[in-house]
Length: 187
Image (cartoon, rainbow, N blue to C red; front, side, top):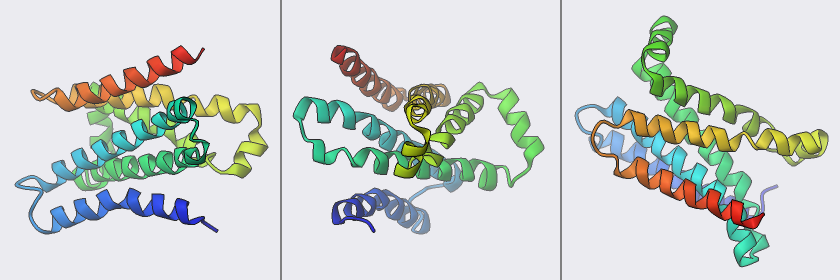
């Protein structure tokens, strides 16, 4: 059973989904709603991924151990939004045409990188339970280190995707770099 704090975190985590659906249904996604849906779901995935990576340094610096549970919740929310991002690409943009998808993966390196990052997150989502953590022992930590290359792949995917406005990818990369610096200072 979910504690109230866990339930609240999940409810807050799904507010962006409700907002994005309302935008899509009311014409707020503009002339190319599928592209906008892909971009928005990917951005939310990155924001939740960065929020996930913020928890450990924040707990260490603030001694607020009671927020540590948010790490798993935020990680799963990130995976959810990135799964939506993948579904929009595979289902709505490509209509499950796997030969077209493979051609895009080969032709566009940013898609290759995005798919790589998403693939690296799958074992994290599958082993996010406390039961998995106990069963895998020290291997659990090693598996969950995949979050770092997955995040880098996602950030570079976003950077290579944009054509002119690099502000948001640069902001994401800056936040990630700061988080990595905080982790290195811990050592």
